Image 1 (tube, rainbow, N blue to C red):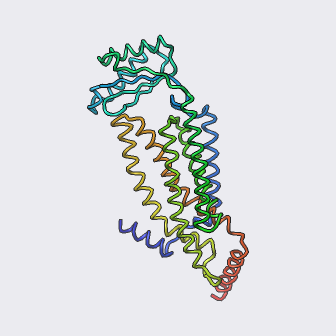
Image 2: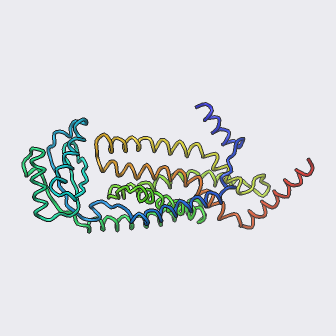
Image 3: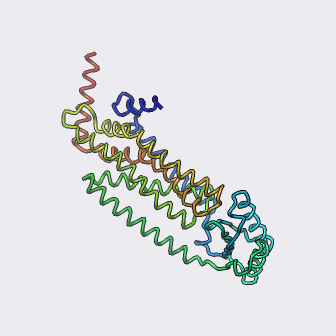
Length: 338
């Protein structure tokens, strides 16, 4: 821990420096590859896997399942539900999730009325409950379409407002645009991970996608604040180029960004583990998975995408070119004198 603290202190003072800005073309190329993979692989796999809320289907909910109160028997109850449904409709491919503390939700593709009634009766018998304790319903795809439309509208409004507020706060549209590009990069790659590994996209996952925008933007603002502080201190006689000032700011906030990402990711990982493997709670799992992926991607994009993009946008400004030229000549003269 002491060595990590010393490393962070050396980064802050400039005694140790990682050249993030100088290697920005490498990071941009890597980002382009990741984005291409995130788009092409899901397309080649046949698209994304959407939950019943988006595709429509049949849903059954069993209340008062005593086995769910015990973690040792919870998995057995879920397997029993799967086996019962498959025993009636072999091609049903049921998905089982725990709702609350003692209810099971079983979702399948759309079943005929007769099949739905047979599954309901079989579930009531398998779990030794009254038929009234097993609710059967049909979920139409229009509900998922409404959720998608609302999510897209929320995304557009969020990005527009965030871009305007950042442009006002930092007094430059270039920081704002760099942050928004990094934000879109996070969304594409997070969605790409879902498509590549076949994770199911549910309304809970969509909520997770929207939530990670706040974390990613917060991390970017912290780094950009330090960049503004460093570059505002640079006068005409500064001994640092603009790129060096931006790189110093990224190095100074590097440990903070990593710590923030780790502190945010650990509890989300715990929720993901508990939701997926202990409780079998689908909603917890779906939200936590989107958050976990988004936190990792957001931390990476702040360091390797947002800050280098801002440096790229400003590198050809006359005053920055003039300072860079002056420092290059001065350093060459100093080197020659030595």
